[in-house]
Image 1 (cartoon, helix red, strand yellow):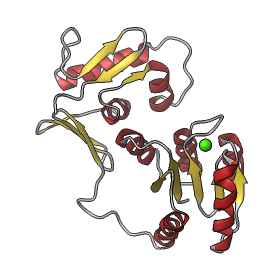
Image 2 (cartoon, rainbow, N blue to C red; image 1 turned 45 degrees about the vertical axis):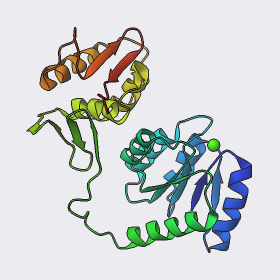
Image 3 (cartoon, rainbow, N blue to C red; image 1 turned 180 degrees about the vertical axis):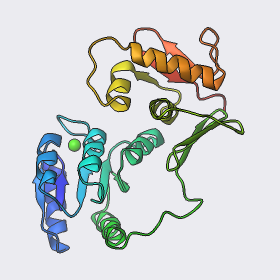
Image 4 (cartoon, protein in one colour; image 1 turned 45 degrees about the horizontal axis):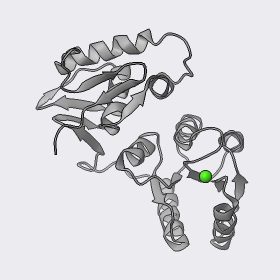
Amino acid sequence: MLLVEDDDGIAAPLAAALRGDGHEVIRAATGGEALRVAAGGVGAVVLDLGLPDIDGVEVCRRLRRAAPGTPVLMLTARTSEADIVVGLDAGADDYVTKPFRLAELLARLRALLRRAASPEPPRRGAHRTISAQDVRLDLDARRAWVGDTELELTPKEYDLLALLVAEAGAVVGRERIMEQVWDTNWFGSTKTLDMHVSWLRRKLGDDANHPRYLTTVRGVGFRFEPGED
Ligand code: CA
């Protein structure tokens, strides 16, 4: 069991509880350390979202690529639904919100390990979906609709839309988009991003000058309008 948490006040009692529950525990205090340890193979990962070096969401994404079958339980102090959706989309299997009860965390972890030991096919109708206005995404099927019309999106267009809709109402910065959608730290031109935004707008039937969905926030990034509740 790999426990990734930089806060010793949380990590120490949690490690003791995990050991008490019969797990062998390796601790890591940074994302970099976690990825190095995980490369050697671990049974499961308890991963804090707030780490000093690499964001927990990004750590999770890289873990997922390196070891797709390893269960990941996320610890999050963030309670906003968007953060949780982004966390689950990054590949976490479950999450526990801080402050948590040790008994609950251990129970969730046991459930994850059981599922990992006997994988079930995903249940129909249990897909995770997100939406804003009349735009809806099925995160498991990677499909998107505007109203009843399904959008034909390229993988990057889909990822871009998923990120923006997950955070609807908030501005998502260009650098973060480049990092999450293009998986790169981008300090140069973000022309690729602008092109994808313009293609996405065309497919959504949006107007850049009078946007209904996708607003450009000059010098910062983009915001998907949440619409009125
Ligand atoms: Ca932390």
